[in-house]
Image (cartoon, rainbow, N blue to C red; front, top):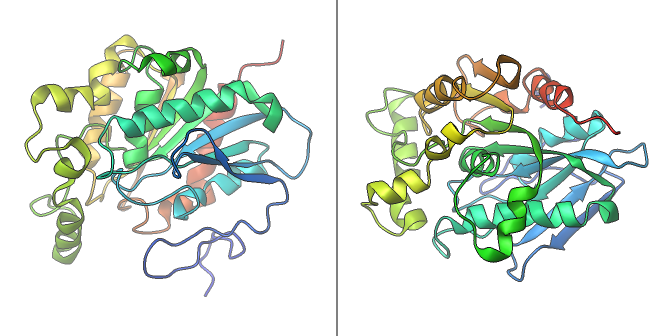
Length: 304
């Protein structure tokens, strides 16, 4: 059955597990480009049907608690509107916990961004107009990637700090790992809260390596730590009925970002009645995606 406002030829196939987006309709694409030696260090690049480029590029970082999901699942769906509107899309996979611990996911995000910058001409990308788009845990990664002075990187990734990021979209973002939803959150039905609690059970241990991470470890994984030094223009979007990542995190992010960003460089878009990404269609609807792309467009650097 068709869902109002959602294209069937784009939509993922609902099924148990990790629903995959439909991409067979995209004519110009290069899939599974390696940016590292691990099997998960791969990028898919999609180009608009028309134009020779170089194209402004949305780098999409999927969510999934840094433990599950991938670059070709339902997180990709909103990117199809970007393709329609003349953006290239680079969908990134990164290594997952518990096989690796944070900040490896952040390092992979930085490595992928640096790879795309260094190989932009090869793939018709405009490396002067890179934008980051991340959902949930991916929201943490793009926020960290958009900081002017972020977490210290390994020597081989220092070049990533020089890649210009023109804008960041953080959707229902895990801004900090100190608090997550679940039982006692007051959001969602009891069944939804139980499901969320089960999904989040042991998340700190899986991602940070301990069930009781230190304040120092939590601070190092929090976007709030680096925000005072500035960040790229920021579009925050969050449903106020999110049972997984507290809506209050985005509220606080907006308050703190107002201290360092100009009014035109910050948007807080509240999706009333919406839950977490993947719990409904809210984050897939054109009316909720297009304002973010418009924000990106306003922050493009013009060709000189």
